[in-house]
Image (cartoon, rainbow, N blue to C red; front, side, top):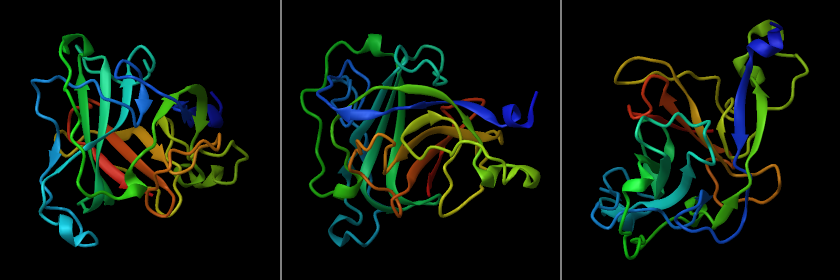
Length: 237
């Protein structure tokens, strides 16, 4: 196996495009498949930054950001008995232990158990528009991605490999920009965490979602390789 193949990982660009998805679709910024008898996720406000002084300590609903069905994205490591990953953002500035930016919640669920849907998704009374996505359908592009120069051994840093994509994607390698390289371990079991999902300010297609993370970088979510339900790491770069 060549050096290049040793540093290859499968990746899926979400490739968002303006559209009108339903709760039965994979999407960014569309309606979430949420059961009426399950409490909607809320942020307790304790980590809200004082850049929004009126929001400090104020309980705020999370916003449905991304919804990915297993039938569309089998590359995701769905736990047994689940077929849907839902990503929620609290769309305010937070001083978190692992980053400064929106807070994140991940929900892995079995979509077949959702019979009756929530009548209306709660909306925050105040939020940062830069963390709030527009509504998009997804037109995924599957490809092989090679490690960013920061992640390679010294003798391969100058190798002429394709650029690491900074678009929204599943898997692949981290598009380090302001920081990196960095490694993360699971706080519950000590296993290595690997990039599960990256949400990008800029998309290769030019069809941006109109959110922005850090200095026009990425919100990266690193998950435990043994169990994605273990605590994850947020990293804004």
